[in-house]
Image 1 (tube, rainbow, N blue to C red):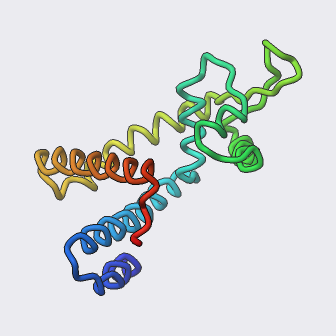
Image 2 (image 1 turned 90 degrees about the vertical axis):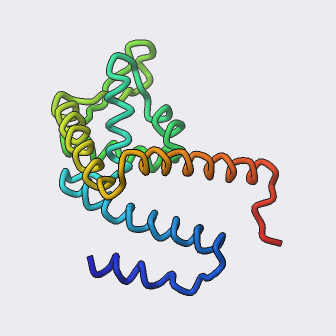
Amino acid sequence: MERLEKLAESYKWIEKIAGKATIEFLKTTDMLEEVHDRFFKEYDLSNTKFNVLVILYKGRKEEIYMSNIGERMLLSNANITGLVDRLEEQAFVKRVRSIKDRRKIAVKITEEGVKCVEKVIEDYKIWSKRLSGTLTTEENKQLVKLLKSLQQGIMQIEREGSISPL
């Protein structure tokens, strides 16, 4: 908690409203990332490892290769290999020969992995509701709408190539 308070203090130098909104957003993002990381640590997971598990969970009936996971998560094959290695050590996933092409190796979620994903999702719903409980339902809806609008604006600026302040 002390770290979050220090983080909140570190952004006080911004005064202009647009800059202040951006900084408040960044500060909130930093705080959310920290509590988010702590949430996943309770399950001996990282957000990234959990995302791999969710991809495999949703695709249980398909063959999913490490390259597919990398494409979906925008990670290199080397990073995916390391993640799958660690998830395999935890008995959440296993590598299996492809039925379609015996030269390829697919990644499958294990029953233990399925149980983990379902438990984390169940707990995450409770946790995120508690986290956003400081806002009313209407404020939450408004926040989601504002964030989506901000995201669209950022993507538009990126497409125009004009993100630079100069």
